Image (tube, rainbow, N blue to C red; front, side):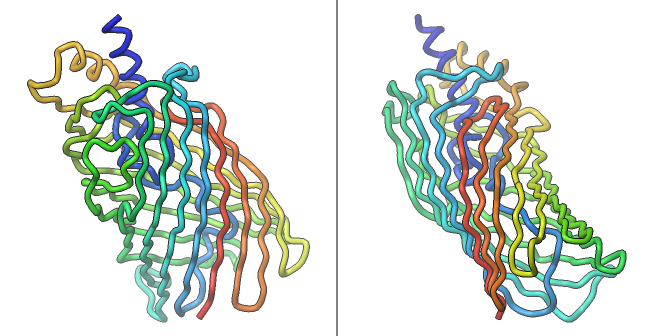
Length: 327
């Protein structure tokens, strides 16, 4: 019976971290889960002309299924709800570097997370966890834009989006804060053909060591998150210069093992389960419809995405509203 409880807790620990990119500090396995999957879509490879830009992303994510390594739902999990408001500030200069237009950007995300279980879990042995706040700042000192093939191909490159931690709420499985860094090289591209648009944003995440990572079965364990690959994508058709309709989504996969470093206070049975778990990687795919609208110096988009094929992660739906203002 004790081993069954530990195994159940181990599965939860595996997937809690991957519930949603924005809930990265929730611990367990599954890489850093820093990036909010699906945040970008239409025209993502098109770096705008020199000037200042403000972007506001509003996201609502909900899931009532938590999948293990075999894609089976875990009954002890109830649901997760995440509400996010992310502010982004972009500056594009008139200068060039390495053949591309040079710029920088900064993200400030605000999160509200509710996480519920059907049985008590975690360091605080509760069925419900919640938190709100700023999990990290995201800054890129080197953003480059390229416009190729007579305007048909546009490419955006960030040497690294740097996730700057703000500190974590120890023992809180829904804690939005984090105490480790993530470095994310980014390449995005947009291909235009008549009224059609095809875009993709490719990212790899490399994270530093996380101290005192809370787990679902009651212990805090140091770990080195595994590296991750993820891609946002979109395909759309422009019915006019102002309106565009299409589909968007994302694919996420953990590439390398998490590396746990439990101390002597963690029972040997849990240490063995942690060692076995290190090879289990998170994965998910999502797709859904979207619409894009341009009015003078403002851009609006509304998109929904449904997840499928999840492994070691929640499976739910994500809904995005994005507003861009050109100064």
